[in-house]
Length: 359
Ligand code: AHM
Ligand code: MG
View 1: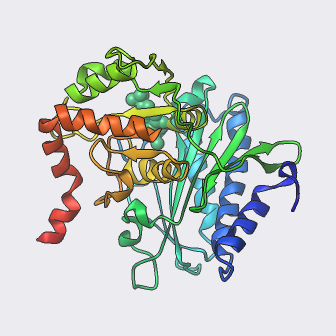
View 2: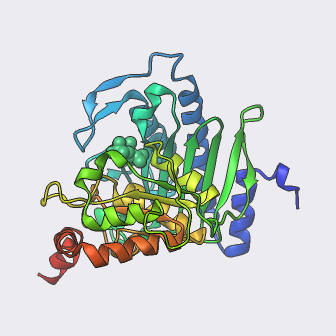
């Protein structure tokens, strides 16, 4: 067994898989390694972003009507091209694409499904602030020879692996296959991700909460009370948590997972037709929710664990409370106590899948 300093991500994934599933064929291992390789290529571009003409918005908007950055398109492309021909995947879905991304007919289909947000928080690139990639891997469940929408719209409980890459002062990749959460730091001198954070656990004692306080006027009463509670305004003997908000979910989540805390992007009642907040269930909340649970934390939409929600569409949005489980449970409690009106409206949006199935 090599010392931790020599443990590359490839070796770690391989050894973890051998232990967890000795009969495994190694496909998941190779798939994770392909993602690590994509991450290195994206990292090379994010660190050079100020030097080449890749900054600034492209002339396209993404499926949410947001202006895309050129690096979004680049990262989206790298991940697709690294994975379209390997025979490991049957279908992909990206936050930047409106529909599922089929594997081109000329390539073989495999047994896994990849969902990803290629460059989360990409508006931060222009100002040289951390961004990230988020991914989740499911198993194919449809019967046809190629992958289908059904393979992508799976509840988080059936996820096989998840991870993220944070492009910060150094590049880190964090992943789980259900046996804890492990973090690797890219050593640019050798071009390898080296194990730097083994078996990460969210600290029991929290330091931080992260929320966009600028949205306060849209918050529901439950969220207002909850944030006041985090600020220690209700006493209860605890000192206030510090507020930290980068506006890059991966970076905010990463800090809170290592140092203790909770990230909050709530739903609101600004528009009753859109009570779900900003973040995406499939591309952001489910993969990070799986990591949070594996690290001993929790992830909720304010009502139930995000991993138990069955997505009914690719672009489904969801409120997100993620991090230390005590702080996440407290959010659920405030919402239950103060937000009946919001909950009723929100649940009808979230539970469309169940309604469709009942018809
Ligand atoms: P994106 O996927 O379009 O980059 O948006 C997601 C990002 C998250 O990384 C971040 O936490 C959040 O949006 C910030 O939103 P806001 O500016 O509303 O606080
Ligand atoms: Mg995103």
